[in-house]
Image (tube, helix red, strand yellow):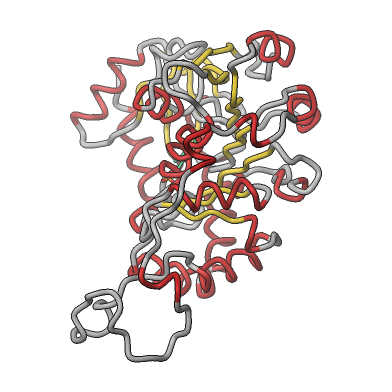
Length: 345
Ligand SMILES: *Cc1c(COP(=O)(O)O)cnc(C)c1O
C-alpha cells in the first residue's frame, strides 16, 4: 500500500476541522451555555454527540472491532461520498469499479468529478482480478467491490478479494451491505491484516432500519480519523443514535429470525419462479433479492406495476440482459407477487 499521505488529497491532509462546542468539554453533566441551544424541550434541545461514542461502543461489541475502527454515517451513502472526498482529487484521480454493481459508486464519483473505470465481471459474475489490476494507473486511488454484489446477488471468492488487497496499492472499498444474508464471513475480521481495506456495512437491510439512515465504514484508525474530520460535525442526529442503540440491543434475535425467514422465503420464491414459462434463469443469491432472467423484462415489470407490485427492471444493466431484480418480501408479499405472475401471459 502507498503511504496514506500519498493517497489522501493534500487539502484534506491539511484540513483543520470545525471545532464544535462539545469538542472541548465531553462530560455529560453540567450547565451547558456553550452551544447557543434552547435550554427547554428535553430531550431534543441539545446537539447530538458528534463522535457518537455510545453508539460506537455498542457497534464495536456487535461487530467485534475497536471503536477507533468505526465511522458512522447518514447511510452508507455518506461514507461512499466521504471516501471520494478524502482520497480523490477532482478532475485528476480515478477509481476502478466492478461492473455491474451498486449505482451510488458512480453517482458519488460524478458529483466529485472523479472518473470511474469499469471492469466487467466474468460471465459467471466472478471478479476478473487480472483485468481489475490492469485498469489501475498512477492516479487510481480506490477500487470498489461489493460482496454480495448488487444486482448480481453473489459473494466473490475471498481469495480474489485478498489478491486485490495485496496487489493494489490504493484503497480497496468492500461494500458488505448484504453480508448478513451471506453464508461466507465478513472481511471485517481481516481489518488488521490489510491497512488499505475499507469495509462498508449498513443497518438498512437485514436489521430493518433503512428509515433511520445509519451506515458504517470500518478501517484502520488513521482512515477513520480522516473521515470523521471531514464529515458534518453532527451528521447523525439524536433520534437516529437513540433508536439505533435501542434496536440493536432489542432486535438482535429478531434480526437473526428475520434473516432465517427471508432465506427460507428466497428459496421458496426461487423454486416457484423457476416454474414460470417466461423465467429463463434464476441466479444464485447470497442476498435478500433474486436476479431473474426473463424473456420480456419490460412487459413483466409494467404488468406488475399495474398491480401495484414494484420490482426493479435491471435489463439494461451490463451482463443483466432480460433481468429483473426482486426483493424477497414477507410470505404474504411473496404470495401476492406469485399470484400476479401466474396471471401474466
Ligand atoms: C442498499 C445498499 C446500501 C445501503 O445504503 P444505505 O445508504 O446504508 O441505506 C449500500 N450498498 C449497497 C450495495 C446496497 O445495495
